[in-house]
Image (cartoon, rainbow, N blue to C red):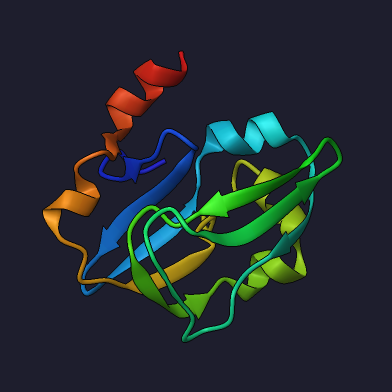
Length: 124
């Protein structure tokens, strides 16, 4: 995982990539879910507020809702993981983001996000 990403207490992450952000679920969340068998992602152009459910991930153990860590508009969906959700379980698979968003979120929206190192301590 990228040390510069910010994480939520519900195990989503957001990572700034120039003009946009990648949003996904943390390795810890993937481990807890077990073998992921299905993922439902929103359409490009959809808009979500911080903490709104934007995706559903199903594993052999459970189904989980995924929450948007900051408000934004979907500009790209990771079709690879939609078509082959098991890729998220592969440690060598680097493209674990779920969606890319445009966001003009202010500092208030980022205030409760954890640095990756703090997140790792929180889940330890």
